[in-house]
Length: 253
Ligand SMILES: NC(=O)c1ccc[n+]([C@@H]2O[C@H](COP(=O)([O-])OP(=O)(O)OC[C@H]3O[C@@H](n4cnc5c(N)ncnc54)[C@H](OP(=O)(O)O)[C@@H]3O)[C@@H](O)[C@H]2O)c1
Image (cartoon, rainbow, N blue to C red; front, side):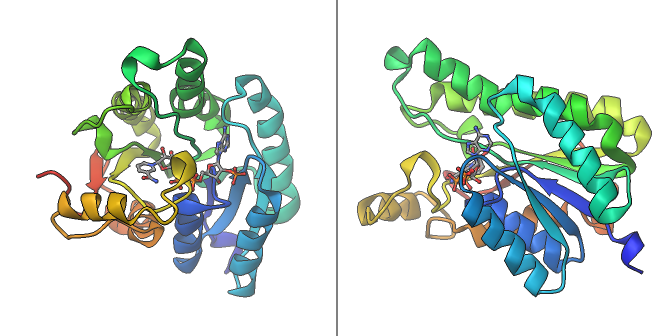
């Protein structure tokens, strides 16, 4: 029944949380379109891993900071859906792509401000607008926020503010897309051991500090997050919309 398989688009799935999300979605029988910004080989490796496990996947390049490119991206995606799946629509959209620019509030430049707003907020707003005709009724959208909208750490002001705006936007998207049966939720991970913001390398002190602030006693790995995002794309979650789901192991309760 290949023609009935759902298709999910996960942005920023060449590495980290997006990669784990794509693999988790594939394990639940979804086909995947994943995007990368510059790590084409890593994206190709994710595609191979999915296809070797019997799934169907393809990678497209996307710069979430480049709003002007969304028209071309939408055209490429439309052509791809026809060529690879003989379909005109996909079912799930996961806005995961992102980078961190950590700087103190007083030191944050306008350039860093614009980058964070473009990548984390403007892309979710306008890419969803552009992709809306390609998103099937009864489908779903998952936005990605951060625990930093609930608790604070110095250096995350504009990043966290952009994510806070995404949480509000999630409710409005859920309200306006709800009549089409499209559910929109936002997942807010606590700290996850990925390359994000330059990664933590062998900084065991940082990991120990996070562990000390976390009820479940360690920093998260991508495998703690992707399955939660994928679960929001399951029939069991069909009555869940406009919700912020924090996945932080109980950080700073
Ligand atoms: N790690 C954490 O502690 C944490 C906590 C809470 C929330 N989050 C959020 O989770 C999401 C994923 O983070 P992660 O930790 O998995 O990061 P990551 O390991 O650094 O991976 C980032 C992914 O996003 C892509 N990407 C980066 N900049 C992009 C841009 N301008 N346009 C399009 N794609 C871009 C990267 O593509 P390339 O590989 O091609 O560069 C990569 O696939 C982000 O939205 C982040 O804010 C992370």
